[in-house]
Length: 223
Image (cartoon, rainbow, N blue to C red; front, side, top):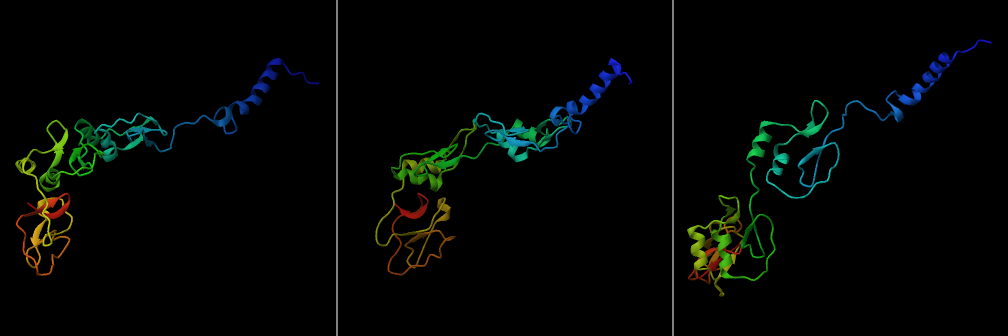
């Protein structure tokens, strides 16, 4: 009988254990060791501001810079396989001077100019008609949303419009400003939006004594 030395025995045992240690495909225990990663990166985070290997939680504050990632950002792996935003000139320029989100005309009566939709009570005053008629909702020099304090708006707020009423006061059509509205009809009694209506009426009325403009989003006669 051939005698196997201890050294030869150790070599045989080690050789037998190599497939177990390396896994069936030679990639380590359980085959869970990989080289490189071809999986696409994921745009994630509460505001879409993170480029990562997988969905990642974040706090939900918002900055204007976050809009840059959606507008011009490219989420990809770099040469070392790490996920991140490609450092393009467009992204860098946007992050240095991000374009702010437009202001929103909001409130129950459209009387507010804010960063986002804002609820309010639903009482109505004649002054509220001034905002859709001549108001300009925008950011000021400091980036704060509000109504531009133009002569037209201030004059309207000092002397707000009171809608006219009567059988020969006829109004028709939605509007965004006074420029959308004009008088017409057979007797000039109709205040309407010519982009939405032909302005045809019967001929028993004449034009009322008042102005035709945009009041609360509708073309209407006012005192």
